[in-house]
Length: 113
Length: 112
Image 1 (cartoon, rainbow over the protein chains, first blue to last red):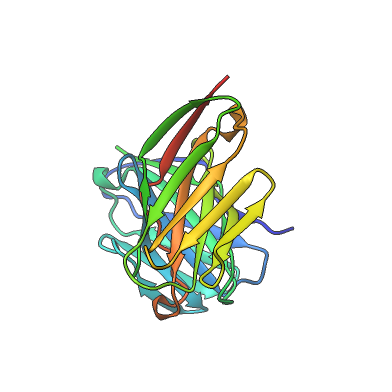
Image 2 (image 1 turned 135 degrees about the horizontal axis):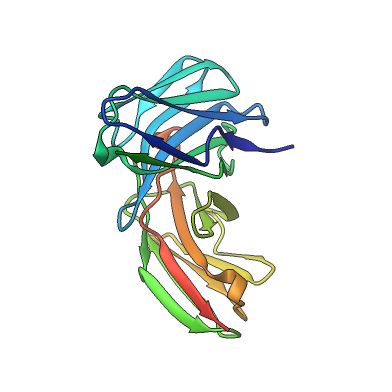
Protein backbone atom coordinates (compact mmCIF):
# COMPACT_ATOMS: atom_id res chain seq x y z
CA UNK A 1 0.00 0.00 0.00
CA UNK A 2 3.14 2.24 0.13
CA UNK A 3 2.68 3.63 3.59
CA UNK A 4 4.69 4.84 6.55
CA UNK A 5 2.63 4.75 9.72
CA UNK A 6 3.52 6.43 12.98
CA UNK A 7 1.83 5.01 16.04
CA UNK A 8 0.43 8.27 17.41
CA UNK A 9 -0.61 11.59 15.92
CA UNK A 10 -0.53 13.41 19.25
CA UNK A 11 1.22 12.42 22.46
CA UNK A 12 1.51 14.10 25.87
CA UNK A 13 4.12 12.79 28.30
CA UNK A 14 5.55 13.88 31.62
CA UNK A 15 9.12 15.01 32.22
CA UNK A 16 11.34 12.05 33.05
CA UNK A 17 9.13 9.44 31.39
CA UNK A 18 10.56 6.96 28.90
CA UNK A 19 8.82 7.56 25.60
CA UNK A 20 8.59 5.25 22.59
CA UNK A 21 7.67 6.55 19.15
CA UNK A 22 6.95 3.76 16.70
CA UNK A 23 7.16 3.79 12.94
CA UNK A 24 6.21 1.02 10.51
CA UNK A 25 6.63 0.91 6.72
CA UNK A 26 5.18 -1.61 4.28
CA UNK A 27 7.49 -1.01 1.31
CA UNK A 28 10.38 -3.32 2.32
CA UNK A 29 12.69 -0.29 2.47
CA UNK A 30 16.21 -0.67 3.82
CA UNK A 31 16.56 2.93 4.99
CA UNK A 32 14.54 4.50 7.78
CA UNK A 33 14.87 7.93 9.36
CA UNK A 34 13.74 9.91 12.38
CA UNK A 35 13.57 13.72 12.16
CA UNK A 36 12.34 16.39 14.48
CA UNK A 37 10.84 19.62 13.20
CA UNK A 38 10.75 22.87 15.10
CA UNK A 39 9.66 26.34 13.92
CA UNK A 40 12.54 28.21 12.33
CA UNK A 41 14.85 25.18 12.47
CA UNK A 42 13.45 23.05 9.67
CA UNK A 43 13.83 19.27 9.76
CA UNK A 44 16.79 17.92 11.69
CA UNK A 45 17.93 14.32 11.40
CA UNK A 46 18.06 12.48 14.72
CA UNK A 47 18.97 8.94 13.62
CA UNK A 48 19.20 6.96 10.42
CA UNK A 49 19.08 3.18 9.95
CA UNK A 50 20.24 1.47 6.75
CA UNK A 51 19.47 -2.12 7.77
CA UNK A 52 18.14 -4.21 10.62
CA UNK A 53 20.11 -3.49 13.80
CA UNK A 54 22.24 -0.89 11.94
CA UNK A 55 22.07 2.78 12.81
CA UNK A 56 23.91 6.03 12.39
CA UNK A 57 23.66 9.21 14.40
CA UNK A 58 22.21 12.21 12.67
CA UNK A 59 22.77 15.83 13.56
CA UNK A 60 21.00 15.83 16.94
CA UNK A 61 21.13 12.36 18.56
CA UNK A 62 21.61 13.55 22.14
CA UNK A 63 18.80 12.44 24.44
CA UNK A 64 17.52 9.87 21.93
CA UNK A 65 18.15 6.25 21.05
CA UNK A 66 16.67 4.00 18.36
CA UNK A 67 15.85 0.37 17.81
CA UNK A 68 15.47 -1.55 14.57
CA UNK A 69 14.87 -5.21 15.30
CA UNK A 70 12.74 -5.84 12.20
CA UNK A 71 13.11 -4.32 8.76
CA UNK A 72 9.68 -2.71 8.76
CA UNK A 73 9.82 -1.11 12.20
CA UNK A 74 11.99 1.74 13.51
CA UNK A 75 11.48 3.01 17.03
CA UNK A 76 12.65 6.27 18.53
CA UNK A 77 13.21 6.23 22.29
CA UNK A 78 13.41 9.20 24.59
CA UNK A 79 15.14 7.71 27.61
CA UNK A 80 14.03 10.47 29.98
CA UNK A 81 11.77 12.99 28.29
CA UNK A 82 12.46 16.66 28.83
CA UNK A 83 10.46 19.75 27.92
CA UNK A 84 12.97 20.71 25.22
CA UNK A 85 12.02 17.53 23.37
CA UNK A 86 8.55 18.90 22.77
CA UNK A 87 8.40 18.86 18.99
CA UNK A 88 6.96 17.34 15.84
CA UNK A 89 8.63 14.01 15.06
CA UNK A 90 8.65 12.67 11.52
CA UNK A 91 9.57 9.17 10.41
CA UNK A 92 10.54 8.35 6.82
CA UNK A 93 11.74 5.41 4.77
CA UNK A 94 13.44 4.89 1.42
CA UNK A 95 15.06 2.17 -0.62
CA UNK A 96 18.84 2.16 -1.03
CA UNK A 97 18.93 3.17 -4.68
CA UNK A 98 20.74 6.36 -5.67
CA UNK A 99 17.52 7.89 -6.95
CA UNK A 100 15.19 6.71 -4.23
CA UNK A 101 12.55 9.04 -2.88
CA UNK A 102 11.66 9.12 0.78
CA UNK A 103 8.17 8.40 2.07
CA UNK A 104 7.07 10.12 5.25
CA UNK A 105 4.65 9.28 8.01
CA UNK A 106 2.01 11.75 9.14
CA UNK A 107 4.09 12.95 12.09
CA UNK A 108 3.75 12.71 15.87
CA UNK A 109 3.33 15.92 17.81
CA UNK A 110 4.88 15.23 21.19
CA UNK A 111 4.34 17.52 24.15
CA UNK A 112 6.41 16.96 27.28
CA UNK A 113 4.95 18.64 30.36
CA UNK B 1 26.24 15.56 5.36
CA UNK B 2 25.06 18.11 2.85
CA UNK B 3 22.16 20.40 3.59
CA UNK B 4 20.27 22.56 1.14
CA UNK B 5 19.42 26.14 1.96
CA UNK B 6 16.10 27.36 0.59
CA UNK B 7 15.42 30.95 -0.33
CA UNK B 8 13.26 32.89 0.32
CA UNK B 9 12.14 31.68 3.73
CA UNK B 10 8.60 32.89 3.00
CA UNK B 11 6.74 33.81 -0.17
CA UNK B 12 3.23 35.20 -0.56
CA UNK B 13 1.55 35.43 -3.97
CA UNK B 14 -1.91 35.62 -5.55
CA UNK B 15 -3.62 32.68 -7.18
CA UNK B 16 -2.63 32.39 -10.82
CA UNK B 17 0.85 33.85 -10.31
CA UNK B 18 4.03 31.84 -10.60
CA UNK B 19 6.10 30.93 -7.53
CA UNK B 20 9.86 30.45 -7.63
CA UNK B 21 11.88 28.96 -4.81
CA UNK B 22 15.62 28.50 -4.76
CA UNK B 23 17.97 26.01 -3.18
CA UNK B 24 21.72 26.34 -2.74
CA UNK B 25 24.16 23.70 -1.58
CA UNK B 26 27.87 23.52 -0.90
CA UNK B 27 29.49 20.42 -2.42
CA UNK B 28 28.97 18.31 -5.54
CA UNK B 29 25.85 16.18 -5.71
CA UNK B 30 24.45 13.18 -7.57
CA UNK B 31 20.85 14.31 -7.39
CA UNK B 32 18.58 16.84 -5.72
CA UNK B 33 15.03 16.24 -4.56
CA UNK B 34 12.16 18.60 -3.78
CA UNK B 35 9.45 17.88 -1.23
CA UNK B 36 6.24 19.59 -0.13
CA UNK B 37 4.78 19.67 3.37
CA UNK B 38 1.23 20.70 4.06
CA UNK B 39 0.70 22.24 7.47
CA UNK B 40 1.27 19.76 10.28
CA UNK B 41 1.74 16.77 7.98
CA UNK B 42 4.57 14.64 6.63
CA UNK B 43 6.59 15.56 3.57
CA UNK B 44 5.60 14.40 0.10
CA UNK B 45 8.13 13.85 -2.68
CA UNK B 46 7.61 16.14 -5.68
CA UNK B 47 10.47 15.65 -8.10
CA UNK B 48 14.07 14.42 -8.37
CA UNK B 49 16.62 15.89 -10.74
CA UNK B 50 19.87 14.10 -11.48
CA UNK B 51 23.21 15.92 -11.59
CA UNK B 52 23.47 15.43 -15.37
CA UNK B 53 20.04 17.01 -15.96
CA UNK B 54 19.50 20.75 -16.30
CA UNK B 55 15.73 20.91 -16.28
CA UNK B 56 12.81 18.67 -15.43
CA UNK B 57 9.05 19.10 -15.62
CA UNK B 58 6.17 17.49 -13.80
CA UNK B 59 2.73 18.99 -14.42
CA UNK B 60 2.89 22.62 -13.22
CA UNK B 61 6.30 22.08 -11.65
CA UNK B 62 9.56 22.97 -13.33
CA UNK B 63 12.89 22.27 -11.65
CA UNK B 64 16.24 23.53 -12.86
CA UNK B 65 19.69 22.56 -11.69
CA UNK B 66 22.89 24.53 -12.20
CA UNK B 67 25.75 22.45 -10.84
CA UNK B 68 28.31 25.17 -11.63
CA UNK B 69 26.48 27.54 -9.27
CA UNK B 70 25.46 24.73 -6.91
CA UNK B 71 21.86 25.82 -7.03
CA UNK B 72 18.42 24.61 -8.02
CA UNK B 73 15.10 26.31 -8.44
CA UNK B 74 11.53 25.09 -8.23
CA UNK B 75 8.94 26.96 -10.28
CA UNK B 76 5.23 26.40 -9.72
CA UNK B 77 3.22 27.90 -12.56
CA UNK B 78 -0.34 29.21 -12.27
CA UNK B 79 -0.39 28.76 -8.49
CA UNK B 80 -3.52 27.63 -6.68
CA UNK B 81 -4.57 28.06 -3.06
CA UNK B 82 -3.96 24.32 -2.64
CA UNK B 83 -0.25 24.91 -3.37
CA UNK B 84 0.02 26.67 0.01
CA UNK B 85 2.65 24.60 1.84
CA UNK B 86 6.31 24.49 2.82
CA UNK B 87 8.78 23.35 0.20
CA UNK B 88 12.10 21.67 0.98
CA UNK B 89 15.07 20.66 -1.12
CA UNK B 90 17.39 17.76 -0.32
CA UNK B 91 20.69 17.59 -2.20
CA UNK B 92 22.23 14.12 -2.15
CA UNK B 93 25.63 12.63 -2.92
CA UNK B 94 26.99 9.09 -2.70
CA UNK B 95 29.37 9.90 0.13
CA UNK B 96 26.55 10.69 2.56
CA UNK B 97 25.17 7.18 2.30
CA UNK B 98 21.40 7.03 2.36
CA UNK B 99 20.94 10.09 4.55
CA UNK B 100 18.59 12.80 3.38
CA UNK B 101 19.24 16.18 4.96
CA UNK B 102 16.71 19.00 4.77
CA UNK B 103 16.96 22.71 5.41
CA UNK B 104 14.42 25.15 6.79
CA UNK B 105 12.25 25.24 3.71
CA UNK B 106 10.32 27.95 1.91
CA UNK B 107 6.85 28.69 3.23
CA UNK B 108 4.57 29.48 0.29
CA UNK B 109 1.22 31.18 0.78
CA UNK B 110 -1.10 31.42 -2.23
CA UNK B 111 -3.98 33.81 -1.64
CA UNK B 112 -7.29 33.25 -3.46
